[in-house]
Length: 367
Image 1 (cartoon, rainbow, N blue to C red):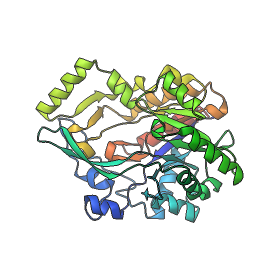
Image 2: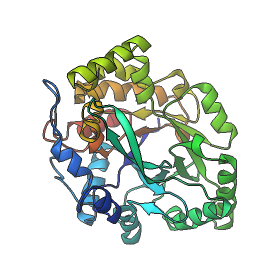
Image 3: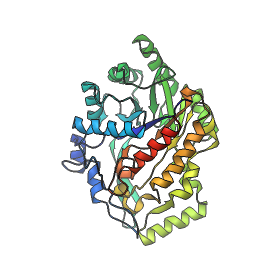
């Protein structure tokens, strides 16, 4: 029996950038929000404090090596780095991945997910409502020449022997596929260029978050995507309450200042849908969630997301994919290190490395 492949999303945010200095103050990184987070209700586990790796800086190669070593220990197959391309050559947070390419280290498999959405700075009124937002960087789609430019910007990555291939093809995920003006054009141009440059056609993966229905899956497949990554957190959250229940919850949050809460052990079963048993569908492991470091009382919190409950969730995901063909036995982990969303498996002061050892023990059993 072939071993399931878990690919972990990786946030390359933990280093200063000129734009972040301009928007948020000199030296800002994701750690700024993580470190200043406060508990908003009794028993709220904030702030989250990193353990083994500390408040790291991704400009340091030693940090990236240590992350890869922890991921290997957990049995994770590779990292899926978020990649930010806003059009016309505008990138953000590209330094860590550029260094991974330049140095050839760490020697750990990787792929890319194009996080194709605009960035905004949100403003809140006195009642905590999202009253307005300022556009920081707009996601644009200038046309065919930009699609070609984008491909050649990443060609060194696709030619790297560490780059993850699925069915013999370099894997590339698009975070918001339905925002692409013409997905078939993008896919067609890149496949043609891939053949021309000797890397072959791509294995394009569409990530679906808001709508994981079969109709939306079929739409993306028809547009040329080879596979679908389902991320059911938002959908599970919404479906765990009736409409009136969600209205009541929102009103209660405004009155009390307590964020929206769900119990992890009551909701993680909803992170799998019937579609996830189908070929070419890659489900997502979600270890935890607490968005309050970024959004305060407007955030959302999963409580009781312990390593023990995480273990039950991972076993359900592995059972979902274990009967698939070896090339389809893939799932994603959201995420390796999104600390500002309380969504990570890196060691912290509360649970140490228990998430890592939990993954290791499950994967060793299925080896």
